[in-house]
Amino acid sequence: MTTLYGYFRSSAAYRVRIVLNLKGLDYEQAPVNLVKGEQRDAAFRGQNPQGLVPMLVTDHGVRLTQSLAICEYLDERHPEPALLPADLEGRARVRALAQLVACEIHPLNNLRVLKHLTGELGLDEAAKLAWYRHWIHEGFTALEAMLNRETGSGDFCHGDSPTLADVCLVPQVYNAERFECNLEAYPRIRRIVANARALEAFRHAAPEAQPDAG
Amino acid sequence: MTTLYGYFRSSAAYRVRIVLNLKGLDYEQAPVNLVKGEQRDAAFRGQNPQGLVPMLVTDHGVRLTQSLAICEYLDERHPEPALLPADLEGRARVRALAQLVACEIHPLNNLRVLKHLTGELGLDEAAKLAWYRHWIHEGFTALEAMLNRETGSGDFCHGDSPTLADVCLVPQVYNAERFECNLEAYPRIRRIVANARALEAFRHAAPEAQPDAG
Image (cartoon, rainbow over all chains, first blue to last red; front, top):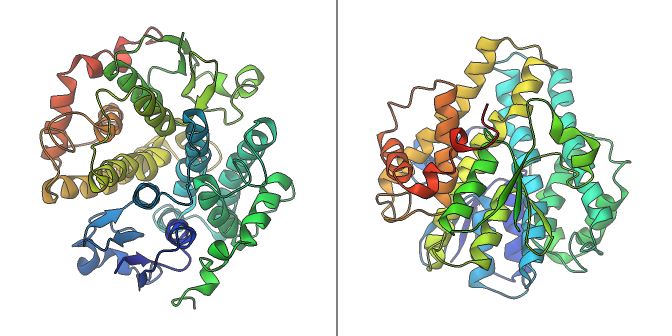
């Protein structure tokens, strides 16, 4: 059985849940409570020295880390439905949109960074929120422009079915909503996310639908 | 002709230069001076709304962004020498090692974030350096453990020839050295980087070898 070590609110674990659902794969969940710091416990670090979720233990017993690497593994092992288009330029575009979220927005706004800002750097809640919203605004402004300008966009980030880009975008928008970011300026992003949320694979992957949801 | 929009000290552009060299591809460089803020100019933003380097314009005239997406595009278009192993678990491992650098270390330590810390947040130089070194230490501690524990490691991050993981690691180590991080605790990382630096493809991609080096 495939096991996903994750946390209901982790955007990165949320990405993997969406892919597991899109591929129609059975899996069990092993919740790691990030707020309680369980990801830093020796038991978990012994398995994943990064101390991060998600970690996927495959049905072959292999431990995989880093959400995008896990998503691409699942896509290569279970090719249908495809998370990447067939043409090389299309694949590069989808990966770039995914990485705009995964390398430019999410790393600056995840829990360990926000904790570092309010802990070591002594920022107050208002300054932390301003930081969070700044990187959402920077990233979503770029993403909205790319989605509007580039010919590949459709009902989803690329074409009319979900790809790796939507798999990253939906959890990031969920997170932005949780931090009460104003998303008025991003109608294309909101329309795509609404289309994705209409699909069962995305709905069942949502934080509030997870067994460890508080 | 393939054109790389980059900056000699950009770690992300450095990754793409290594791959272009490993693949033996000719390309021309279009320097974008990040310190002068040229990446935010309307002329560049018109081509890449992210306002980030690298951007690769292919010989077909297609604009590609996000360094890992560009590297995988080049690997798919020019399969030899391969940047990813053939087996699915090995591919996932290499991508995870690459993303540990590209999603957990680099995004927190790049120029725009450091400028935000000293600008908007008013941090002094010492606090900025402490921030930089904190994320290097977090990331390299995890990476060193993975390289030592996991059976895939060899003279390089995965096996005995360079992969996408080394393509990300070498620029990150260059950057850490520039910020005078103490790397004593990471002998495995240092050994791998020394092996990579012995190769012409890596040497010719180094910041000091670029036409826009100051």
